[in-house]
Image (cartoon, rainbow, N blue to C red; front, side):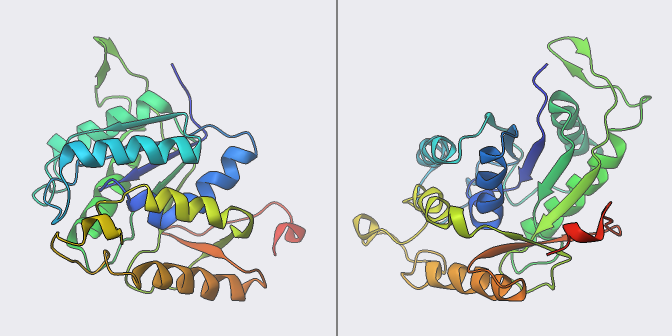
Length: 240
């Protein structure tokens, strides 16, 4: 079994890069094992294709130094928080037994983000119930519940419950985003349909949000996360 410290469960390839790649890079540098399980292949995206996005995800994974990256192949756009998909997510959680899960925003302009947030939240709880049976390579999986489920913040502004300084990892975060050349601004794709995220200005919006969060803790760039439960610390001096 390959145990991870942090598992990112995000609905589209590139969601993790936009939402929490600075935090991923920071924890990889600290020696933590971090992996991404994308829920869908993003097959409904306006630009690119499944095959192209798989190649882009692989390139980004190299930049991020991930331990694993895989895709559950849940239908893009049409999934719900149902038993069928809960069991897929439960199996992934039990497979990697993460201490912390990072996932999509619980409220956002893209409906997949909020629905995947609910799906992951539900599945993270159910994964700890031993009477729910899941299997990996024909063997029963052990029940496992992560200590924390945190939600990164996407298009809609949500006041964060916790902010992580990612200043030292900003350039690599941007490189991981730009690895998805079919999705974000890329002169080679000028003949393709243009979208909100493919405009040259979009990366500036990402940077502005990170600078806004960074200002709150007196650093240059930061990523914000929310939690559905109250967070605690062992020592007041850990607070920034």
